Image 1 (tube, rainbow, N blue to C red):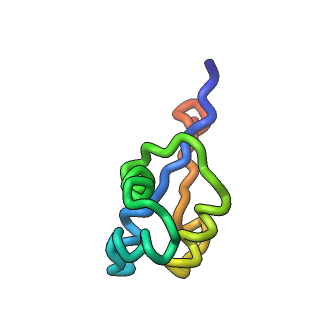
Image 2 (cartoon, helix red, strand yellow):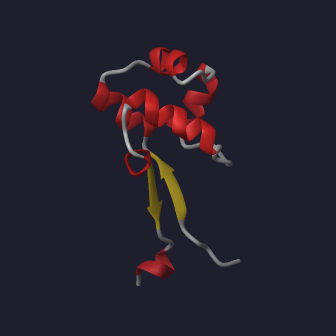
Image 3 (cartoon, rainbow, N blue to C red):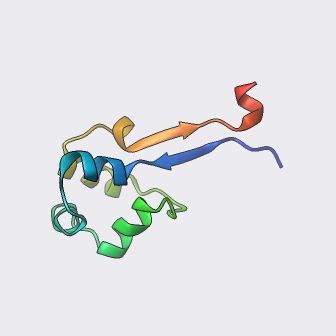
Length: 77
């Protein structure tokens, strides 16, 4: 099967940079703490654009600050 690369979620880095706790983000973005942990651990399999928008609004960041595309090894060559 052909690999198309991966999307890395950089929420952990954004939280550290902003100084915001997961609990505060949970409240501001109207998300469950377990959902935030899944984003921080990059264990999300499907991204919901509404959730991404709420995270960006809560952290006052751009989508490119939150997500990173990592090409597969074959695409990098």
